[in-house]
Image (cartoon, rainbow, N blue to C red; front, side, top):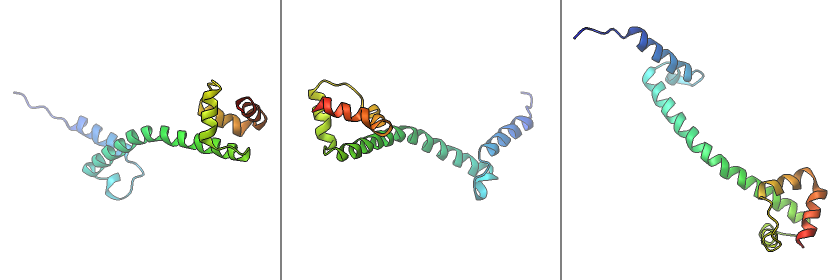
Length: 114
């Protein structure tokens, strides 16, 4: 079998990996093996945090909605129960946005629920 020299390809992959870890601290930015490990860990964290972000934003909208409701003397859980009884289908994210952006519209929603 003929000999295959892979110098340029190996250099290209090494260069690309080191470009990905530019700005990392210590050996992770200069050593190929440590850079590989750093890239793998960064990929795992990025994957997991894309999932976590959805929960975090849902939590934030719940918190905002609860704060707006407390100003009107209601709690979040009672308000959601009343919404379901009144058959008003507005999602929680939109309710939180309305509560922050236009309080007078939010007040009208509250009155229709009560």
